[in-house]
Length: 186
Image 1 (tube, rainbow, N blue to C red):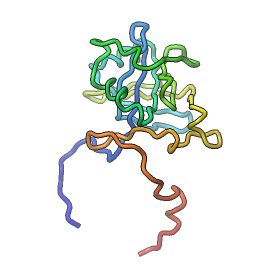
Image 2: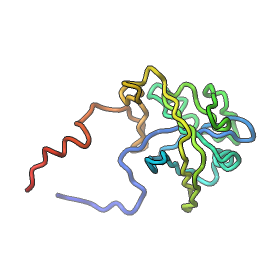
Image 3: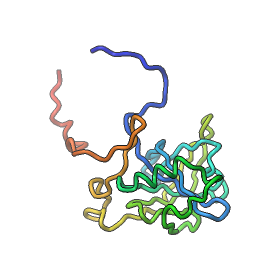
Image 4: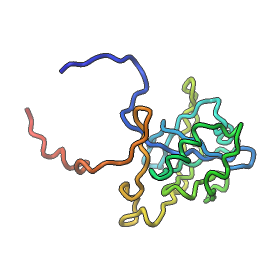
């Protein structure tokens, strides 16, 4: 195997493309983020890294709540726009129709098939970014994107971020927690 070194960097081969929603000065704002993942199963938590300078961070700090919205591939233009402009310079409250759930202060984008409303469990200063760990208060799912009452990735068709580009979900490779049973020791 011929490997090269590329230096230390926060490399993940693929990341979800999400819209982080927060009320800033009483108005919904959305920013595009890809540095996000699951943090805990019980209680259910997610986390997202946001640069200190981002306008959305002000809203998260102001309300101690935020939303993570999963846009479908058909929302690539609007989603990318929310990452290109700052809410400090441009009002992005009309890019999506906002709705509120249990928390009342975490705006969610109605057009996104999945919305998670979160309370801030912890904020960790990691240097250039703050890692916001959010406890999920509720998940809102478009009925059309559910199979057996659960989110169906093929129906959601989320935007995947990798190599400075957006991708859609490909075909299933095999079943997790199952295909490995076919492994033969060497």
